[in-house]
Length: 304
Image (cartoon, rainbow, N blue to C red; front, top):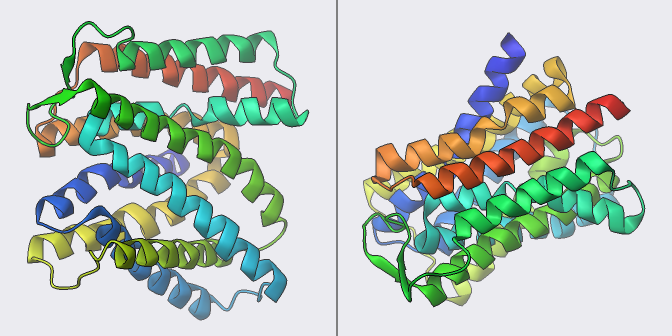
């Protein structure tokens, strides 16, 4: 029971990322600036935690890999995913991003690491059917409403809507390659240490982004700072700890299955806090995507 509770708490924290980020942006700051402060503060917290715990030092040559590959990869997928929210809304972004297990399967198949069985082929079909339903293919009009994507019911032109879909799916594809890459790099290194290094790398990337577009700023409103603080503690640091605690008690398969609630929690938080609409189309498409992930996870359990 405790493992399930820890995993649900982690999912709730991760599910709030899009909404908290939207709240901070509504206060007049930019996405790059929000992400910069989120990861700078998260790096500080995790480095302090690692220092207090006295974890074994990672070799210097490995440190660079986790900062550049781990941090850079994380910055890319987070930046892509959150950049899609103004165009498609938090619910659609969450469900489209949650196709990442499908992309992991494809990457592993291309590498020859895993075979595409009948069960996995069905999961792929369900996942892509979910994408088609959520994206509403084919288009029936030149203008569509993104379910109040930016916190209003303003219609979103097709070009911007598809830009949002592409960004969300792009994040999922990047994550599909990121997971096996990080699994290869992780080896026997302590997770908190590599996580701290990854956060440092991401913080550097977002700092360069915010400095490059001249949006870096620390003169933020109280509400913006509160949202960033919540992002740091509630949606970055604590979920990472809770997820590991749940993983140790439930194992990878059961943890992954319990985590299926994350995109639905994201949608619900968006509806309650931002007033964004959760359409029937998004709900049905999201259910198909989650069903695909469940199929993939149960297959892994049988193989194990």
